Length: 374
Image (cartoon, rainbow, N blue to C red; front, side, top):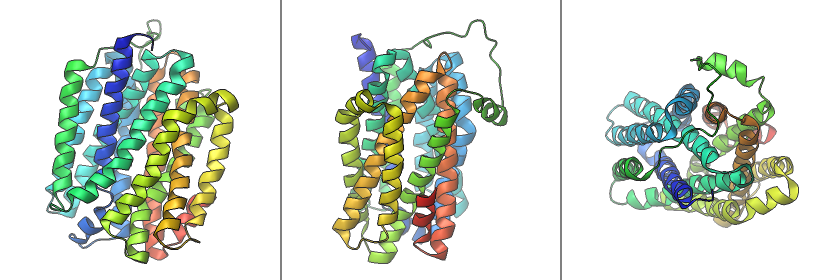
């Protein structure tokens, strides 16, 4: 990452990741109120989040594969445009099925953004700097997810549809900036001697079981399940149990994410160098589980805020640690590895909220017990 152009490219990628994640986070605090206008509750929210992840799961491996063949830049631009238009569709929806369709397209857009960006970072960093590069990309991911809800809660004061229109504009602006300023990269090692195989998702999943980083992909699946489970239900949990406002829900998610961003930006590289990625992963899986079950034993805004912050911090350390290990073991298949990484993350994001929504409608405590055990 020595050259200025590579550093600049990383900043543009961070900005794009921030925009995409802010667009996803934007709608979290307003979802309970927005779904009320359609007369639906917990289960519908769980399935809407799962629909997003389902599309991500289907298209992530294809996106990683295509980015190895055609380069990362165009995939990212197409992804941002699809993502932006899907937000517009979601905000303008008049029927529940349109919400599901819009979330599906959001997932497709996201799939075309995230794996190519992770592969892009691998292209422009040396192996020693990769942890730092993935950490910075992870930090912008967390920052977007953290600031998104705060912006969403604020914009919802104008109207409940307004946040969706702002998300559309932001994604289209990011696509335009990427078109003009993002450099084209060639994959670090071109697979000239290997014929490019178009494989369907099931064949790719099967192939992933033979890779050296398969155990890490399972870790991605597990922590994505827990994280999505927590994020899908925390807004509903505090809304139904304590009557939190969209503003308070936004503050809860924002504060938790903020600590995570600081840790990812300033602490993560030191932790990797001192303890290695594996230890960081094991400790933070344990901390996540303890924080998740603790949410049932605390009461009031501040105690919940502290527990949520601990949970989000542990989760924000897990992501770059796993991404870095996978990238280091992927060799010349950065696109495939990033696609598989995102596919396993999507599987967790898909099963987590769908199950959490069903469990939440049975008993508000069940999603947290399930997430802790997983």
